[in-house]
Length: 153
Image (cartoon, rainbow, N blue to C red; front, top):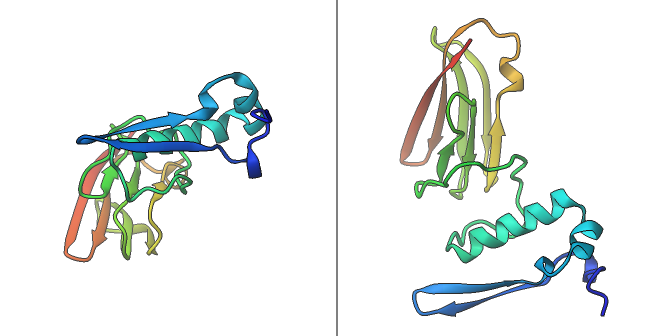
């Protein structure tokens, strides 16, 4: 039937409204042929985005710029900091934003301005070799600003 070679190389999935929720059908879950032909990372990305869509996160497209494995829950504000001491943030809120990485002496280490959404910023590589201390990740959107402190050991 051609299930091992999806049209255009992309999965075919459906979702249907059901009461207050959604029923989803992820055709690629039938066997390993499709997953192997898509490669596991691509399959995982489509499946994760499919689940987000079924869960009601309608601002996240089925293909996104998210590069990391999300091991945390998205925040309704559209700004989700990475868990624990990971220096990163996922922005799902549309519109212009500024993400700044600051040392506690108020020195700006890096700043990114963008209108892309969703987008995942990971500043781990920017802090490799940084001196131990407290750093701040600040996110500014129109009408909203929030920050997270984290420790580099």
